[in-house]
Length: 467
Image (cartoon, rainbow, N blue to C red; front, side, top):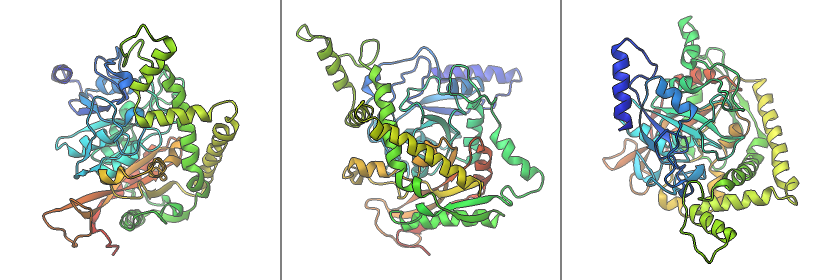
């Protein structure tokens, strides 16, 4: 009904000569962003039945430009996950559009999956805390653009970690993602962390060089992050990302090897300590009294017992794990050893990036170290192994840096087992996407768009074929 009403309103305005930047474009919205009158539950039973009376600023700006909201998308509960398998309520676990036995990535897996799956033009508003835009974009083969922290208002976002959360965009192409980000970006007085900029047309800025007859990346200094091409990275992934770097070099960019040793070694630990600490505070308010899951009251329970039961029933296993870890990390006796130390490491990581950007304009590495895993493989992972999947993406998120995941190749794998196949693949062969991640200095999303436009997916490789 909402989509029909919006479509009718947009049609009437177009008939009067109005030209919205997103007029008539289907738009999906991650479940952690508020949409007026629509269930917005962040994938959690703790927000069961919550239909906000307002829309998030990012969502409202898209509506004002004529977008048609066609639905909310599945996610890990409050964003707690790398594969969108921790869905608490409202949705089924999303499956990879290229192989339903595999994951979409997380936590914005629903946004990436539907963007890849739809045959019509489609944009999706996503959100990232430690890689929740880049990871699913890589696994589903779409473009995912995460902006500078504060570039898009967080008003109306159901928070995971306040100092890390960023609202971004997904599209079938880099230009699609850039267009959506251009609509959402800009200062908002309702968000104290919003940057003062009025917003930019990132596609137009990136097109200036081409209009002047120059290569979009001529002379651009690309730093290839050596730390993220070694052990643990699937050879086929490494090969495709190196080919993407060569595409940029062939277009006039200059390649340079860069190292971020602190980020590579300490990034995951600093990120998760910071994230779970902030999450434990953000989720303290959910008790089922004003909204969300409220178990039946019992005359045999006092308030504390009822409160405990409501929260025990409201949160899933991963949410409980992160609440407990975060509460421990911010306790008076442990705060200096964990949370404060993580904050100091975070500052050093930011300085490491700043030093790198004094030598290069863009950093390049794989988005994810592996191909989309099968659900039976995910079930065998320990929590630590799950967290280590984010090793490439936590760095720019800790530093609040803009980053873009763009498809750079395909790997042929057997649909059932993911085993090696012949070069061209047979009728039972599926092709799994590989993502290349580009990182730029703060407020230089236009450079990401410039470079991302150059990268084109290379032909599919069979697993084990690095030629």
